[in-house]
Structures are given as structure tokens and as C-alpha cells.
Length: 119
Image (cartoon, rainbow, N blue to C red; front, side):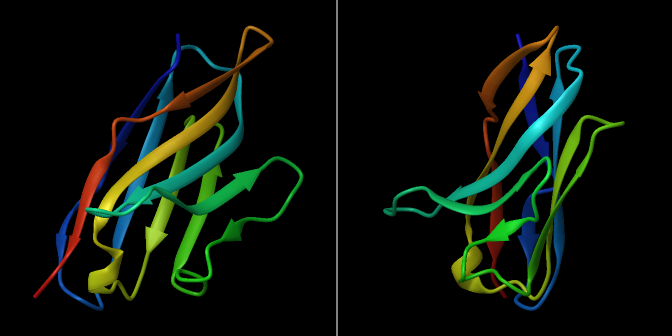
């Protein structure tokens, strides 16, 4: 079984930065797809960023130029660097990953981490 644990969330002032980490555990071989989603109060969950093997990262228009997704297979971790944060970025951020475990692809979600942008 694969588990995803997010960290790095918290309270930050507008214009500040945060880096979210998503550690994928469970003796995986590699992360083939890593994504970050977010859900603000009263709104539907939306895809923020995605990165897959053999392709360039993709971002929601609302975060292009400010957020950067990356993946470190040696550490089995997906990151989301968030710069120039805005109040509208406030949400619970969820990590999603597809990974290999003994040659089997598993799809997993993290429990989420709160990001609050406020002065």
C-alpha cells in the first residue's frame, strides 16, 4: 500500500512563498505522475499543477509564473514551490501520485495540507 504525506503548509502573508512537499512511501520504484490539487471553502477541487515522466509540467492559468512543480525520484517526493502568493491561493492542497510498486502502478491521494494567505 502506498501512502502520501504532505507537509510545508501554513500561514503566509500575501507576496510570500511556501514550498509543499509530498513524500510517497511504500517501497515504490518511481513516481510516474505527480500532481497538486487544491480546494477552497465552498468550491470544487481543482488541478493546480501536474508533472509526468517524459513531459513538461503543466499549470492552471491562475498559478502560471508563480508556482513550480518538481519531482525527485531519489527521495520519492513531489514538490510545489509557491511564490508571490495571493489570498485567493488559500485552500487545502492535496497531493496525487501514480507510482510503481513491484511493477504495479498505484494511484494515491494525500490527506491535504492547509495553505492560508493572509495579512
